[in-house]
Image 1 (tube, one colour):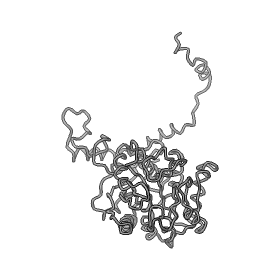
Image 2 (cartoon, one colour):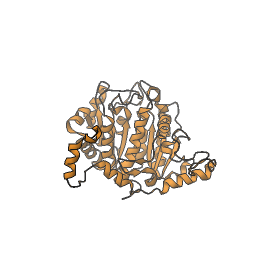
Image 3 (cartoon, helix red, strand yellow):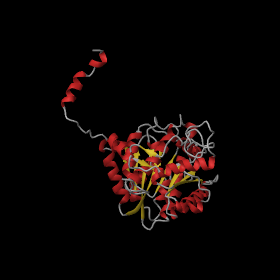
Image 4 (cartoon, helix red, strand yellow):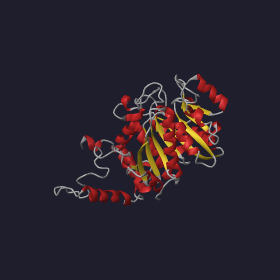
Length: 384
């Protein structure tokens, strides 16, 4: 008997004596879930690619391949839109879609390392690496959602004028009944984005804000900057400070003025130490309770620097000690399952990124949030 024949022999003999057993493995449940998802829309994409991109050369055996690519293959080719969603040139038709991705290339609200104006471009480019199917969620976004990319907001080299442009863009999309997803851009955009949604909601809007920083100052360097969005957003009558929850706060970059405003406005600040002490599930429960109290909708704002600086080098104010990706994604899953009215992912700064990993995490955040909403029956079609 050779070594490999004998290796693990006692274990195999023991298992042979046991009856067949079903393991409680999520991985197997997730694999089984895939069988329930149709491939209708994905097949349409391949057919459309061959129709508009010409049939492949005769030597190509796979006849779903086209001459000019009009589909997600190969990942290194194609004009980048977010997750390869179709580009919607006529934004007047955005109401025909469940979700609209928009870039907000704005970083003149930055107080230290600029570069977030290039965030939307980087996020879109690396998102080509993803398919539309999530193994963990058991969701194929292309099959469940009608998505489009409306391109970028035309931001101006003036903070307040850019706020006006962003407000109009988000308001237009949301008023058509489409979920707006904003690819930032620095965090100053949080104010006009939230204002646009609040203006179109008949009731209170709660805010769940993931960040290492409070961003609750009135002004910074005499302007409304990326350190000030939630001071001004919570001055909107139907977005009261009592419904603002900020998660992941901590470190050495939290101005005392902002801390004083937590007490003054009665907002809720949850630190990383709270997450360690209470756990992700309990923190998500608290955040949902506070944000949804008396509210008709909840807005989700994710600053990429809420994650530990070791995972997100490409951001303007990196701070060690934040969420790990697994922790942050778990928290986002729990929040998204209750439904959100809008999502922004901000402060991706490609000039400081390494191997696109900050932009990739931003992509993962957006894709996961959408998939969690689908899986929870809050958006699009769910297959069961």
